[in-house]
Image (cartoon, rainbow, N blue to C red):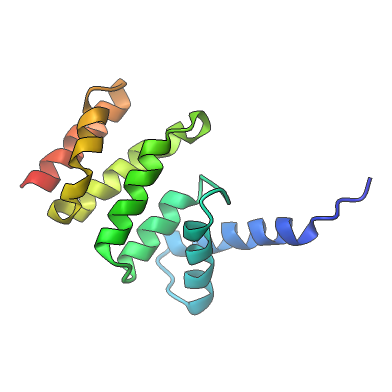
Length: 129
């Protein structure tokens, strides 16, 4: 059977490459465009979303929009998304007091599983300072 979706796999490869460049903090229009696509299409690749959101925040995305996107992602809590939850929680802590809108979600995580609770408590301290 012939795979008729080569553009999809090329897109995923481009997103992965862009994520690697984003982790290195390379700021080019192509990287920014691909990270924007990952953010907009919430079902593209959950593993890239924390990287894309962090990249967008570091390169000028409105803080309120970043916090809204993180809160939405945390509220989804799909089973295969679990490993990225501490990264998103950590980003809220890094944003600090501007992430106050996320306090109710973080408080719920503070009462959750151990690894989520530690990350949420640390983020809440940084946000409430």
